[in-house]
Amino acid sequence: MQGSSLPSIRCPHAKRDSGCASHVDAEGHDYEVLKTLDFAKHAPLSIFVEHKYLSDAQNTEMLHLLHKNGYSVRDCGEDYFAVNEKANKRLQRTARMRRR
Image (cartoon, rainbow, N blue to C red):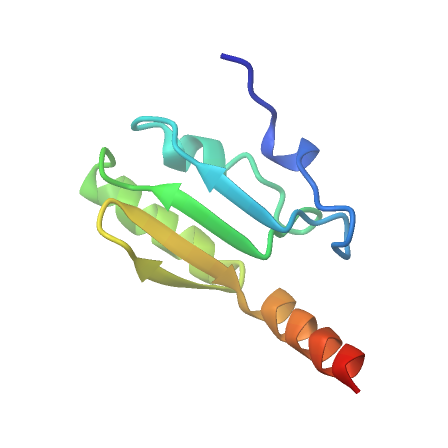
């Protein structure tokens, strides 16, 4: 299976060289993959990341990493759905302006 590094995946409409969304499912290595993302350069609007195979410590560290970088996080059972609050607000403002 071929994959791409997180920073190499981007949305052509995103600001700050950010991706629109990222999905991480690395069968127990999800936190290690997520740690490779440079949030200062590539802050996806949303991240869907599996946590079912993580230890309690890795789970806590992953949540801290996401919160520290401005994401609100919802637990969806075996996965987290994280939304970048700044990017989400910017997207909502843009959508409102386009409707005018």
